[in-house]
Length: 202
Image (tube, rainbow, N blue to C red; front, side):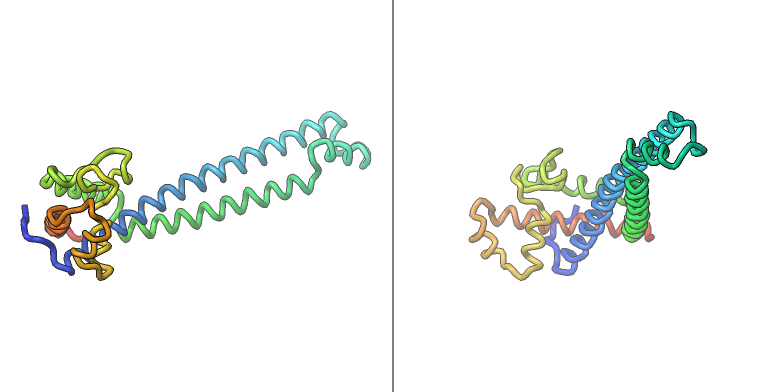
C-alpha cells in the first residue's frame, strides 16, 4: 500500500473518479423513478380505455345515438380526460427515454457498470488498509468511506482541501477531526489512485 500522502493532482483524479461514480449512480436512481412514473401513467391510460370500452358496450357500441355515446364518455370522465392521460403518458415515456440516454452517457464516461463495481471494490480495499481511521458502514453516507464512524466522508475532506482550505483551517472548523484523520484521507487518496491506475484502460 502507498503510505505517502496524495498530491493535489492525485486528489483531483480521485475526486473526478468519485464524481463520475456519483453521477452514474444518481442517473440510475432517476431512471428507476421515471420508469415507475411512466408505468403508472401507462396503467392509468389502459384502465381508462378499458372503462370507455365497457361504457360503449353497455350502450350498444358506437352505432348508437350520439347522445348515448356522449353519456358513455361522460360516465368515464370524457374523451378529453383520456387524451390528457395519453399526453401525460407520452410525456413520461419521452422523459424516460431522455433520462435513459443521459444515464447511458454517464455510465459510458465511467466505463460501464462492471468497471464501476470494480472501482467501488478498490475504494473499499483502500479504506480497509486504514480501517483504524477510515470506516465503511452500510446506510451511512451511502456506504462511502467515512472517518472513524462519523458522517465525514473521505471525499468531504478532499473537497475541502481542493477548495483551498488548509489543514489547519479544516481542523479549526471541525475540531472533532485530527491531523491523523486528514493524513489518513490523503493516504487513502494516494492508495486508491494507484489501484485505479492499475485498471485496464477504457
